[in-house]
Image 1 (tube, each protein chain N blue to C red):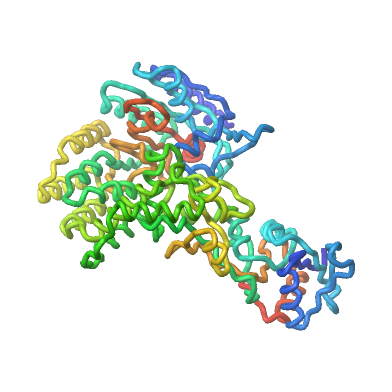
Image 2 (image 1 turned 90 degrees about the vertical axis):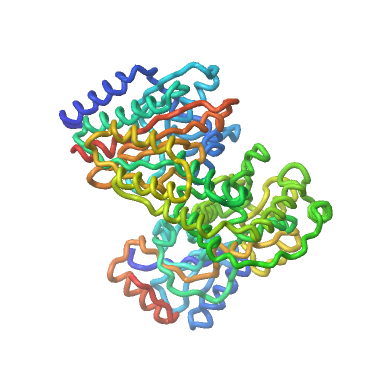
Length: 235
Length: 354
């Protein structure tokens, strides 16, 4: 294939902000078929195909190398695969979509303020309650990585694909790992972020796949687009 | 497979058969839950999982120990038993295929733990010998550290906190650093336990949390108060230094043990029984290159006495095992039952030999 493919989030605020950001940098992304069409273009750049994907699929396809560059959240790159961050190059943070992946515990756990408290609680949770400490999250990879680093092994993950902040009250889990921007949802659910409980600071980024099979021609096309966006990569 | 490799394989089969043990052949497809229950998410991430139409989760056999021991417990514990195995296991690895062979033995409820460990070490060395590998042997003393910890001068609640981090060098280092730099805080006036329990109960009810299903208000209040007490009741600097000095000991086994003895003598701590057992095994290992690393332990709290790893010229672990007297309890046995064993990484051995 001679051209290159740009993946853009397919809906919502993320799509709007991404298209605004490209427009601010002088590139107009068009979506001729409207919101129900998933194919687009950049005006004046016929060699660039634009595809609209859900943000999590953009992360996956960048890592696999089936799309060349795209916009998605840093959190999704880390979550999709342990080798995710190594499979892509971060060309530029876009200055929106900022959010933190955090560990939050019930407010009532007044004795737990840091990850090392959680390590203590997890270590004898099973002997006290006959089951493991349960963590509700959709960030399974990130949770496993960071808990291993913190020396916490005694827990079980309960996969939660939405309304994770409700899991402690509904009895599904004891604590959560979730993404938050202002923390107000957590507060409203009587949850508190641990003082050293920020696992990842995420934001929307322009990313380039390292695995996409770069020929000199395609690379030249990419570099031309990146330079118009004032972005650069290190490979 | 080359003819030489086939011969090695046959010799290994013979060795596994010659252990005077029952040959164990657990199913390839096993329920995944017991593995998560025993080893947590850390090990769980390496399982190859599949889901039945009912939603039940299964994994491809990731090790032999758990199904062997679970089966033993299900058939009524008590009698000494020995099992040996050789066959494929499945784990997600950074390098190498996810399917590879392991061989090993499990010795359960044996009357003499030292004799059992001798057989385990002898088996592992014989297996490595078949592939022409004379290994470096690394020993670790879980029992030795537990014995040191039990006698070292410190407020009791710190002991499980330190024990829990044994084997995770960074986490233990962070805890010791925190303890070393802890300032002398004047103790703030604490509310009464009753008032705290009441306060926490109110918070939990308001948040819609169950008061009985997870952590209870009393448990939270107790740990809070304990934590406050611990912040005031520091570990004596001499004990912290003892722990640091002890954990830093690593090197040729005899030298290491001598250093541990002099540390213990200076601190008036009696480690003689645990040290004697390690020396006994050292004698049996004879000429082999043996190191003792005071901080070495698997990150699984059912290991108890002596643990070991054998590495080859490429520094890959070729055999690992030890004593794990708490494993059977963890899997449902009602009393502690002695257990020891090891596994041998057949694919790595073949790579060394080829």
